[in-house]
Image 1 (tube, rainbow, N blue to C red):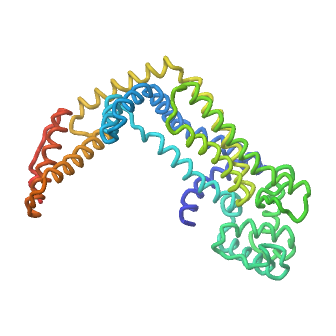
Image 2 (spheres, one colour):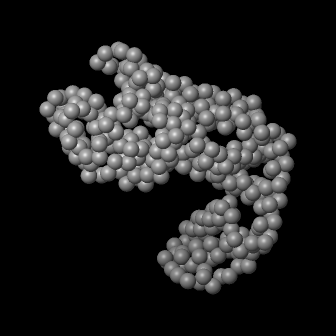
Length: 386
């Protein structure tokens, strides 16, 4: 897991380091960092929003299919896949951006957890010596990490080292690369309204001072920002597709659960993560709002026709290539043929070789029919192999 954090954290760390050099305030640097990552992801968000708008356009046709084949789920799925194929639309197209957003979060966590590495670029031997010193002080004075040693594989070891340095600065004077001065100066800017963003918010602080209030507010603000995006998504969905009912209760529950999960996680991680979530949710809301204004009904209709024509031309030029939906249809047809072949044996007992031959013939027939349907050349030489 640490390797995954490092893989994404290193490039994002250089980005954050460059921003921090221009703006030597960690809180403002996080805001700019979040904005830059949203700009980099905008083309993907645009494609996701376009796909969602086209899916909304297909809802009347999908609902008609649901009514026509309500008693035949298999046929319904097949007809839906055929519709997606005709429209040149991949219903799974929105999964990749969501995965990338989650993937990106690992890097953000690593950047916040390891500012000494990613922002200050202090060498590994010096970092190791500083962590060992912080671990000794934690055990000796019992005022850092609950009095326990700071393990080298602890993701928070750099933040705990910064906390130990803040309380026992003189003990770090022998650490190389001017460690004490560099980290002390950085710690002064590692704050928002005087609250250390490396600390974990809690509802039970040792003292309810101004820093504790600011830290405690961050998770709730992160949840509210997420809730704003969720409510807007629900409002827009009802506005553009008021007849949609299936799964509405489940979708509403998930949209309300997501902000609650954000609050819970923000109380388990350093405040810098929650602060990032606040601005990430707000920028996401602005992007979604702006794209929804851009994708009017007339524009989506025009885009949909253009994409359908593009898919048709591509299919004509590359008949040998299968789209995602074509492969899905072929696999489903082959599976149905295989099941049908197995079921046609009636009560007659067949040998295993006879049953396998029936199944192979059924699959071969299904492949031939799918090839004829899409204008492909069918070569059955591979089907003769056992």
